[in-house]
Length: 414
Image 1 (cartoon, rainbow, N blue to C red):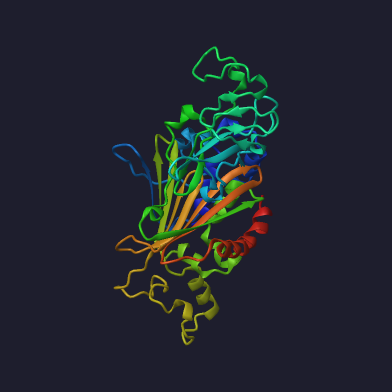
Image 2 (cartoon, rainbow, N blue to C red):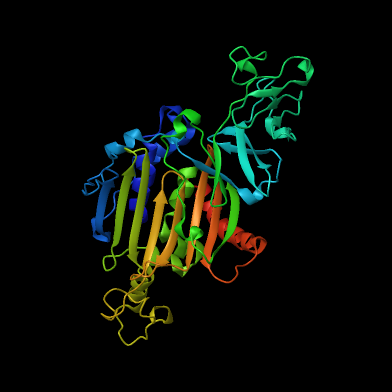
């Protein structure tokens, strides 16, 4: 399963990156690696379907060849929303620098009336002397002010609203073609929104925003009774390598010693169902996998250790009817479904759902940001239906220890 997801997520997307990234070191390295990547045995997959958002979806088998499907030719990386920071990590009315595809931006959460707020974003460059606007401040009127010479810019459209050294001149009118300061004094505005507590940036500009797929949502976050604990960490690892690691359940048993990852693996007795969906004529992509939440690698490993000795007792870890292998379960017991969803280019989440109701009490969501070549931002959240959850600081300590087990291994693969 991990191999198949790697093939779809990494090779398909990377090989069809937009021309803006064709010459990047990041891309050349990963394409060279993926050209030698093996295909996966079809015995692990029960069914794989390919659907589109047309009125009459067509279902066909996905090709597992090294040549990705043609719908990816419309996938434009700049025409997507990217998660950049948790809203709760932004101080009100303070500029914050974030990076996306090696480009710096400045964002701020402005306080509005009646406990409301919004987010604004600009390219982190003052048009006057190219100084970083993130080193400046947010004025009382909600504009970004450069710390170098005090030029101020509207966070919604980037227009220059004040030049202190030209205070006697008329105010800049963004709607006027003969504005006294001209277009050269304007900063570059970038669309920014908040969804489910996450700040999203759209690097493609306002003109392409309308045709973009909206930021994907985690269903449980919108449901009553579910609580969220946000996590963040910056990695010295390329974005696709980190994404592949997150969607690779086979590594969890060995790199982390965590048996729960085995629920999301596949075997000949418990094959995985993988589906992909193209939306907006190929500008968006969603892939999902579903498999019985039972132990597979652990079960196979135990059989090898037993050497066929049927006198040995069954290990405690497989005594639960929901943890037995496919051929050991009673006919009247139905295991939960281990589900993994990926929404290109940055969001995925794991959960185990009830086979009858499709409900889950716990999900782990991931938002991965391509900050630059060899760098990425990892944001995650525990989403649980519970009366309370551990405090954020304690969760962050525990997850850092967990992620330390991945960091060095991943850095050696790039």
